[in-house]
Image 1 (cartoon, rainbow, N blue to C red):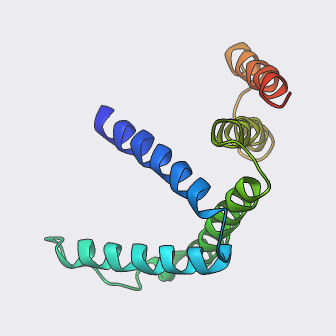
Image 2 (image 1 turned 90 degrees about the horizontal axis):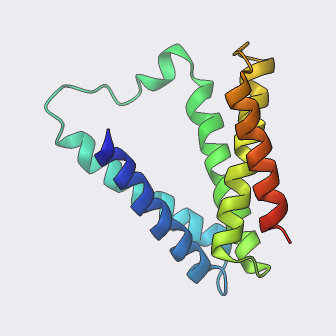
Length: 138
C-alpha cells in the first residue's frame, strides 16, 4: 500500500511543479494535447508489455460513457490548474484548496448520491477541511 501512495505523492508534486512552470507561457490546450498524447503512448507501451491478452476496446463494452466522461474531467482538472497558475496562484495554495474543496464535494456526493453514512469523524474532517480552506485562502 505504501508504494502506490509514494508514487502518487511524488507524481502529484512533480505535476504541480511542472504545471506552474507551464503556466507562464504557451497555449494551455497545446500543452495538454501533447501531455495526453505522450501519456497515451506511454500507456500503450505498458499495455504491449503486459503478459495477459488485452482487448483494446473492451472498456467501451460495459459502460462506454465512462472513458469519455473521465477524459473530459481530466481536461477540466488540468485546464483549471493551468488557468489558476496563469492567474498567479501559488502551488501550495491552489493544490491544497482544490483538494480540500474536492474532499467536501465528494463527502456530499457520498452522502446524497451513494447513501454513505455521515459519521462524527467524517463531519469533523469536513469542518477541518473548511477551516483549512478559510486559512489558506486568506
